[in-house]
Image (cartoon, rainbow, N blue to C red; front, side, top):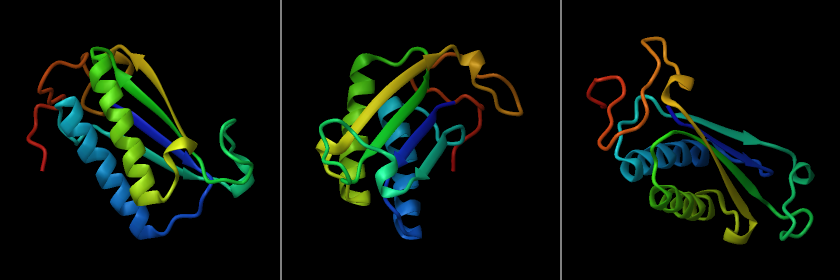
Length: 134
């Protein structure tokens, strides 16, 4: 169960939030070859001067992404995910590519828990709940 966290120092409107969260889930499902019913997304908004990135100008809009993933993802998958998310942040949230930063954490599947059970480590075409995603 990934927990995909996006911190921005920009006030967003509800349409941006909806479009972005759907984009995040769709891109993750496609890139990581898994369903969507176990994806957790956090989109947090902070005041403008609460976040900064060394290469950005003070007061620029920035986005920090922390992507918690189950073990088993390839470096290629993770890099593709980072690029697609950065492009989505630029297009949907209006934050420059140079003002974004991505970190990953990886955990064994049993560190991710839904009510039904702990999740196993990722495998190709994973469907962790054994249900068809709608």
